[in-house]
Image (tube, rainbow, N blue to C red; front, side, top):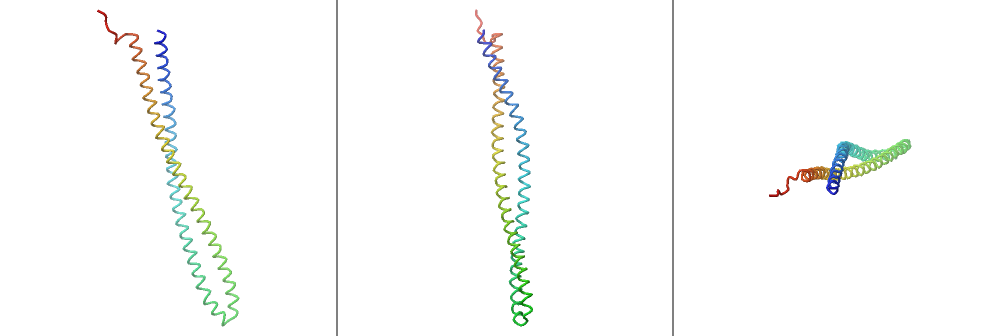
Length: 176
């Protein structure tokens, strides 16, 4: 009799433990699903922001190229005119210094833009990898949660069957 009670107690404890594990995992899965949804939104926003940054960088590179080609084109006639009028040479040198300074600043800004775009691409790739890892963990947790639910039903059912079997003897052979 003591063995039967001990078996029923162990089965009941296993059923309650499986049910509580199911409930705890269910709560964590809900929280994880919300975090993944938030992560997907952040990834979409990051992709949009990166696309805008790439477009801005491309536009800046084009402006810099056109500025360099304009600067090269404008100095040639000025130097030719400087041969005729020496006063133009002083204005041309001062103008070239300002243009070169502006072009150097543009080069610096484009280089910084490239660095930011590369950093954004790396951060976005890292975020996608982390999101993918989270989805895998979430799927694994769902599988474990379902196993705990099945375990709770199994242990509770087995405890009930054994309880009725031992109490009422439904499956006993009748003596004649």
